[in-house]
View (cartoon, rainbow, N blue to C red):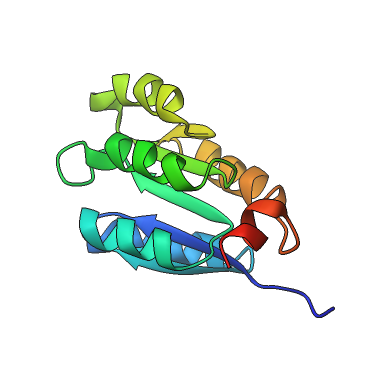
Length: 135
């Protein structure tokens, strides 16, 4: 069996944060698909297989937590990392209650890199039930 490239969906509406996170994940061998709108993110998440979801808490005015809940309705296992600004700290609590695996403040670059490393190394394998069931 050939190695499967890890894939992440990043839902964010700010192009500069997409570029930064895409570069960080590429260093860890992860292909990133970006979604600039809530509808695009949801349709992409439902239509493709990902090993990781990264959601911006401030995405479309705080819809990152709502998107997390929606993803959990059809994908209960794939890790979800929510990125939050210090100004919206309550989003971390809300995201964890909604099913996020991790929550990291955007300003904590070291914490962000560590969390990305943890979730990408523990990402769902290609032969897992969740991945196989969505094919």
